[in-house]
Length: 118
Image (cartoon, rainbow, N blue to C red; front, side):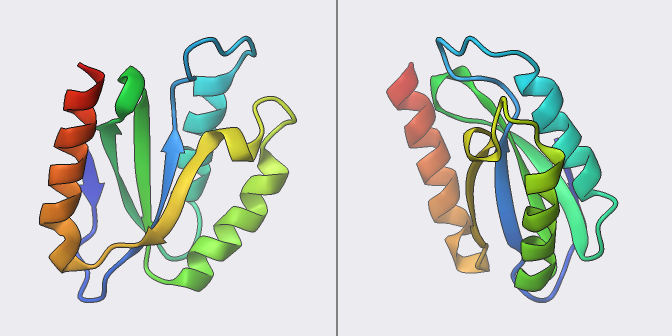
């Protein structure tokens, strides 16, 4: 599912796990990940999100921001929003900047990751 605002500049992103890894014994993993996504939507500079499937049958949500500063501000607040279990480090997969010419490579990577799990 995609709820992403179109922009002229490449957006910055954070990938958040919304399902736990295999063997995870803690609680509230999905709820905490979903809370981070919902709270991101209230932050200045937020552009939208996309849901994706990752390796090991895990789901992720890719949240987008219009600037590195907006992403950094959200990360600082996210540290306060997350309880000790699961930690932000367990929930946050990666952050970066999405350049348009990488979209095809990203799709190939996602398809390769999906095949490697199958």
